[in-house]
Amino acid sequence: MRVRLAAAGAVVAAGVLLGAACVPAAAASNTLSADETGTVSTDGTVTLSGTYRCSVPAGSGPVFVASTVRTGDEGHGIGGTSARCDGAEHTWVNQGRVSGGTPVAPGSAKVEATLVQLNTRSGLPLPAILAADWHAVDLRPAKD
Image (tube, rainbow, N blue to C red):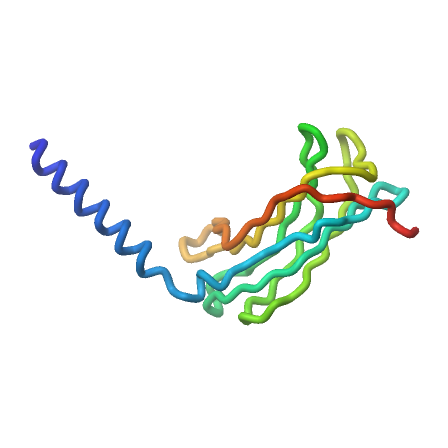
C-alpha cells in the first residue's frame, strides 16, 4: 500500500511540475507597480497610483487593481480599478478615504498593490493574483 501511495505522490508531483512549466507566456507578461509617492488630502482621502500590464483570455473573468496603504500595524484598502488586459501598459489610480482606525497622515507608509482576476469558471468568483507589488511609499499632502 505504501508503494502505491508513494507512486501516486510522485505522479502528482510530476504533474504539478509539468503544469508549472506549461504556464502560458501571457501569464509572465502580467506586471504591476505602485508609485513611490502618494497623496493624502485634508479630508483624509488617500490617492495611490502606478502602472500595470496584463494579458488574460477574453471571457476568463474581470481583472482589478486593488491597493492598500499600511501605517504601523493598520492596513486600509484604498479603492480598486478595473483593469484592461490587452498586453499594453496602463496607469492605475485608486482613491479612498479611511473609515475607522487611525487616520492616514502624510509621511512614510507601505503600499500593497495587487492585480487580481475574478475567475468565474466554477460559478463562484474566486480571486487569482496575477501580479503584486509592495514597498515603502512617501505620502505627501495633496494640493486641495
